[in-house]
Image (cartoon, rainbow, N blue to C red):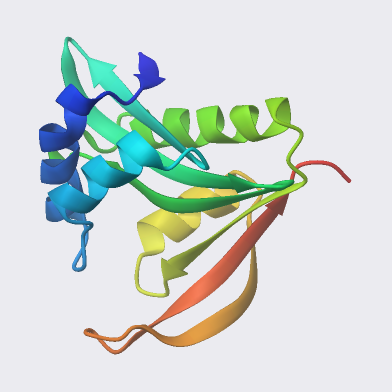
Length: 146
């Protein structure tokens, strides 16, 4: 089940974020954004009462930017990432967004494949985007309406 993230979910979301990314959001930052930033959408995927995935995306005018999307490593390859991304796209359409965009490490082939499966296209590269790792990122976009 996908539902809005609540304050009680922050510890679990932080665990997933921390194990998924080299430069994760801090727990303090997650909590601050959840409770005070009205331009962000926070959703979790709950399975048998446990949060196993989540996404955070911004909505500004008619643009959506995916800030972070992750699934607990023990629950990957079960369609949870696809369900979260599908939910995010549907929410963007409901809110009349024209496109969704993101940055993804050029080395994250699993994420790139998922985004491409959902119609995202590479739209440039950001050199040294992940500075601590010295890794570039693709800009990827998906138009919601042609």
